[in-house]
Length: 252
Ligand code: PGA
Image (cartoon, rainbow, N blue to C red):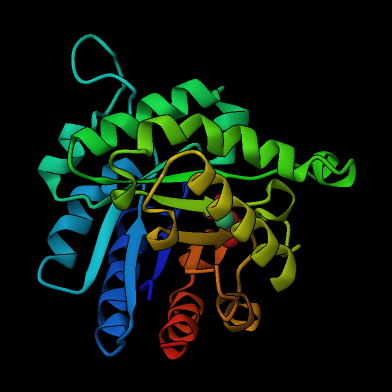
């Protein structure tokens, strides 16, 4: 049985005061929940704050991106080793905003995920199709390309990886994949990982992301291959994020 995992992706939002308030609310609200792993991914400047405020709680914290290099002259870069030093557990790689706005290719995504694994952290590799790709029937071909890219790297260490299916057309749009669309994509991703030599595929947590809200979380999480969620906008509102955590926890 795979444990449920819900991660909040704060993106580039908030300031010190709102980060303090959100960390405190999530820490307190998550304390009473069983059966769900919880994490938040604040912007880089607030990771130290997360480390301090979440210490000793059941809430972990992660980063939204990482440099593909280890150390050296990479101005502005943050290495996986630095994140590990700080106590991060998860690192998002290949989020569609990084792919489309910052030019992260499949090759860059693989290099970043490899750094994350080498640092002893869990990469959360994000995949997903655009609206045009879905409408032209190319969803599986796109997912296959993105998943195949990471298979070779994951095959020996796949146990420590999470994949997030985030259809680009559902991110921040209010449009959510139906539970069946999510389940179909997750089942496809899992079978593709297995076919690519990732023996741990049946045990990997696959998260759904894209306009998850308190009103649709329980139904999405009830599908057999949906092991939790990567939550954007709703993770910035403590009550909404806690309600989504509750939906995952109740599924037991
Ligand atoms: P959303 O974002 O929940 O605001 O759609 C999800 C994500 O981008 O991770």
